[in-house]
Each structure stands twice: as structure tokens, then as C-alpha cells.
Image 1 (cartoon, rainbow, N blue to C red):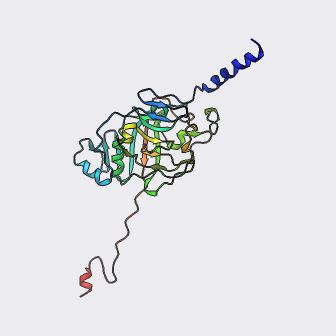
Image 2 (cartoon, one colour; image 1 turned 30 degrees about the vertical axis):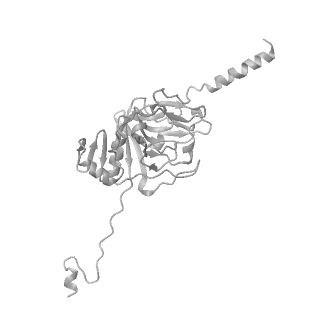
Image 3 (cartoon, helix red, strand yellow; image 1 turned 90 degrees about the vertical axis):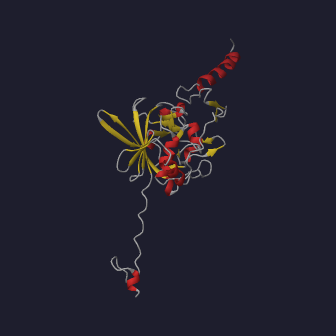
Length: 292
């Protein structure tokens, strides 16, 4: 083989080797959908299901409670819907999950086991509908995901979540902010990880309803790192439009399959204003008496 032929053979070979990144993105199964040459994921045509009873407002959620059979009160202020627990006083929602991926680029922090688990740090058997119902009962609501491309998303105070993850290790409980489970890199390689994700407040956007129903239930997406209106919770950072920069923080993540508890926390409600007393009115003297 002369030098010219060798170079012609070497170039495509080197390109193939360079592209074969063992920790790169994993393709979905055909039943899940396809990825285009540009990297865009297109889900498979959804199986039609009845999601007409998914609540959209707090009033819908309260009405649904009259008919729901799986709501269980487990404490003075705590309730369980399916696998989801919520606390009305603390305004928290707890979701059981387990570690799914530790060593490849990811686009989600939490999905269902039937969702995009091939690109998520954690997976859960919990229903996105149950999470959304609990959120509505705590006073949350859906909002659109705003912000320009490669720019942070505005996070309304009413929809700002703090999110924690905890697990057991050596008879002790480890609790970390969810953002610490993710590292961002600028060159797309896990050997050059940057600092943990700088997200203090996640955006509860509440997914969306489309021609097939409730997107979060169909796609199984709960907490997204990339911009995804179909997920329940979104990363509001400026890196949300790059699907190649987020990696699991293997320095703190427990082993694959380890049970993890994810807790979403809404901000505390503002206390009601003190009652206004007209001049001369006292708690034991009705206003009508003072006016006689």
C-alpha cells in the first residue's frame, strides 16, 4: 500500500474510532423512537391512552379527589397517591427512584422506567400524573417555559422548586441537592467534568397537554436537564439547550440500582395579612356597638 492509499484508508478509520465514544449517548430502542443525524430524538408514535381525567388546575385536582381510590392519608399532614407522598404543611413531594446511569452523557435527571431511561441518571416507577396531582393539591400550577435559546429561563416564585436526593450508605443517610448529582463539561467528555450544576431553583412547568393527552405521562419525563416542555420539571440554566454537556457526578453517585428518594419542595406560602381593625374596634367589641 503506497502512502497516498494509506492516508485515504486512515482518514475514515480514524473518524470512526474518534466517533466511537464508549461513554457517549446511547441510542433508544426502536420501540422508544429514533435519533436523527443531528441528535434530535423523535419518540415513536404514542399508544393512545385515556388521560382525559388528568387535572389541569387545583380545582380539578380537588374534584378528582372525590373519585380517586388510591389516595391514602399516612400522617397528620402527609398523604400518598400511588407511590408518591406529599406533605401539605411542608409543601413537599417525595418520589422513590433508583440510580440508572453513572458514566455517560444524560439529558434527564429523573424519568419513569418506561421513559427515556437510556439517558437519565435516575428512574422511577411512580406515575407523572400522581406527581402532578400532588403538586396541584399543594397549590402549584403549570407555566410555560420561557427564555431565548442558550439563555436562562425565568422562574416564577410560585413555581420555584428546591430538589434534594437522599440514599442510605453504611447505615447513614446521604442527602444532597439534586444539582450536585450532575456535572457540566465544556468539551463533552466526562474526564474533564466541571463543577456540579449551578441550579438552586428548578422550574416546575407542569408538562403540557397535546393531541395525545398528558405529555409527561406518555413520555415518562419528570426532571429534564434539556429544554423539554413535556417534562414536569425543567433545568432553567443557560445550558438547557445543549444535550452534550451533562454527565452524572460519579464522585458522589451511589452504585447503579441504589434506591434514591427525590424530594421536590415548593416555597412556603406567604402568611395571610393580619386582620384590619377599624379605629375603636376591639376583638370583644363589635364594630356595630362602637357606631351606636
